[in-house]
Amino acid sequence: MTAAPRRELTAAVVGAVLAGALALSAGGQGWAQVTAQREAPLPPVTGVLTGTDAAPLVPAAGLVLLAAAVALLAVRGLGRAAVGLLMAVAGGVLAWSGVRALTGGLDAAAAQVFPGRTAVATEISAAWPVLAVLAGVLGVAAGLLAVLRGRTWPAMGRRYERSGAERTGAPAPAAAAARRPETDEDRAQAAWKALDRGEDPTDQAPPGDRP
Image 1 (cartoon, helix red, strand yellow):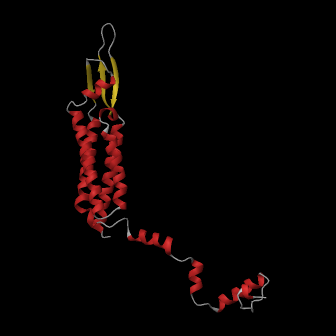
Image 2 (cartoon, rainbow, N blue to C red):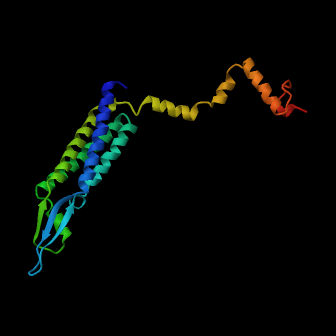
Image 3 (cartoon, rainbow, N blue to C red):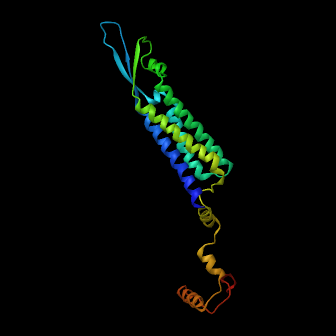
């Protein structure tokens, strides 16, 4: 693998992992403070609207990006382009969810916190929707890189494939040694081992043919 494709693959994988981690982090935070007015003399009630409640697709897209980072290492060719397309879609969903939250799209989710309340006010904490937008942009960039360049990247590495083949198909050391020519040292060791077993080292017949 040349330096340029290796750097591109690393950038795509790191981008997917970072985007997924940011999405999961943002999804677990409070995106808005929700206040519902009640009839006098009852005081208003408040609650926190988390990213998971406000935009359920944010953590889901984060998980998709993390899984895609692993898939980028496992597939090659057109498979990488397909994974890159999935990453770009997940990134787009993240960015859309963050923008929607920043532009007043949390009213329906806020109403679910206090069902039946007509007067519901929300105070948005913009940092977390913005973080979701940034994660989405990063996911789209990493996905497009995989779509455009992924088919030129090798898989995890030929050395890993070779090592795997050696683990499954390579002969054991004893078998390899058995195929090489027998030396005087080998014969001497075999004789000593035969003596230890109480056998006659000069008897060359197979054990099954001995009287």
